Image 1 (cartoon, rainbow, N blue to C red):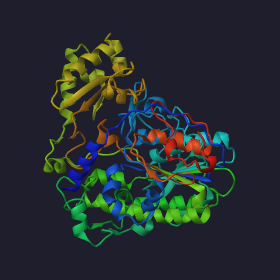
Image 2 (cartoon, helix red, strand yellow):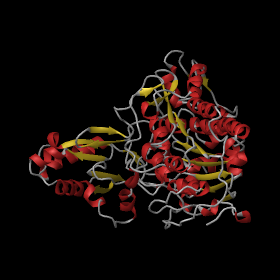
Image 3 (cartoon, rainbow, N blue to C red):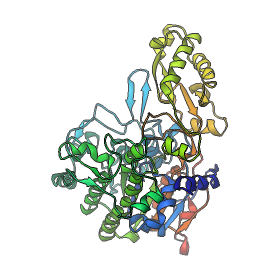
Image 4 (cartoon, rainbow, N blue to C red):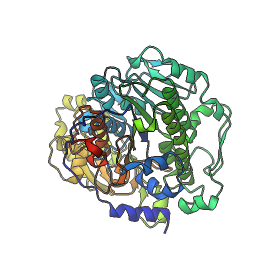
Amino acid sequence: MTALAKWLAFLTLLTVLGLGAVLVRPARHQPPRLVVLLVVDQLRTDYIERFRDLYQGGLDWLLERGAYFPRAAYRHSATVTSAGHATISTGMPPSRHGIVANSWWDSDRGSVYSVGDDRYPAVGGPGESRSPRALQVDTLGDRLKAQHSGARVYAVSTKDRSAILMAGKRADGAFWFEPDCGCLVSSSYYGDALPEWMAEFNATGPATPYAGRTWNRLLDDTELYERMSRIDGFPAEHDGGETAFPHPRPTEGYESTLARTPFSDEITLGAAIAALRSGALGTDSEPDLLAIGLSATDSIGHRYGPFSQEAMDNHLRLDRGLTGLLDTIDDVVGLDRTVFALSADHGAVPLVEHLVENGLAAERFPTGALWEHARRVADDCGAGPAAETVADSSGTRLYWNESALRERGVDLDRASECVAESLTDYPGVEAALTARQLSIEGGGALETLFENAFVAGRTAHIQVHLHPYLYAGGETGTGHGSAHAYDRRVPVLFAGAGIEPCRHEVAAGPGDIAPTLAAILGVELPPGPGARVLGEALRRESGRWGR
């Protein structure tokens, strides 16, 4: 049985059940000194199931000592980086925290990036203006800062949106990698200058060691890689060059290529270790939070697919790379005074060609043709010429030009309903949902996923949900973003202080992470709709952890 077939068999055993919110009262105890939130971008649950026997580093430590929830899945449809990180940090679905996508269309401002904000320029180097202002609720770090005036909250990542949406509005700093300087930068929202420890880290030239460095397999056993993943250089993989090992880096301009290698995570972990070595975290009686966004898995997954040798090698390197972080925490804070949470912002669909090879009906779906059809139908629905009345149609969503419709006296909801009805008959479309439909709660299981990602004025006027294994992202590589289980299923794991090690075969979700950590910290953060405090993960010896 191939690795893909084993995973598909495993997936069929797991069903995502909806559980009501179970409120666990914050425990009356001495909270841990440090919370470490690890979000591995595009970490699918099957990675842990497939490669568990090969671990010998940080992932091994976390699983051995962790409360692991392999059935966890997102309860919303917006399976993208921004929405996922915001859900993990707030405990709320996009319908509450407001981050419905990486970018959305605003009727007044046009395209809006989830963390874009012209008022707050980059600090510490070149880069774009950024802030967390689009977030509509507090993060765990925000609540921690409000309740503990001396608490420190930092977030580091390769991606700006990952760092910012984990950090929140009251954080002491959010930092991300900027290829133009090969360093980590921030935004003036968080201060006019980088903290001294980050400036010193940048002065070492964190990207410099990777100039001209070749990415080779970590292990010498090439047969093992082929057995646990697939042949190297598989058709439809794409990295802008050769798709098989080894993968050399250029000596000039190499900084822009680091994101699609395991080296980017090494830089992020180096920055996290610098934050710990600064003495600012976990060294006094006030609990602190360090959020770490590890993005290499996502970039590599997009290019090579989750069953590639590159994905396997990157995952093994992640396991080894986390060892240095744990060693530093043990040295500076103490692992017995630290609680960890590990999850992902979304999953991904395997490469279409790999699915077909394994007997599944998978296709690369041309959304351009879909929306060309919708634009033709728009005129028949009374909306007028699409060139004037459709503001944006790409991927699986359509936004109307609301002012143009008003000028024509066209009812937006009726136009949406008419176009959506025509799309339900389009080959490959399982459902077409309108903003009006999602604003009224009470739909079925699929509609609920989309309702949990609906925010009026941000969510598209029409969204399509394709049949399983239809990929709408291009002719090479793969991605995510659908409401299907392969995009929503991710691991949830807690380890460290106060955690009872066990594997829990119950339903859970990334939205449970923030309220569970809040319960451990004694911070007030009620669970969002459908979420709960994962009380079964908490140790209750001698009454230490209370309900």
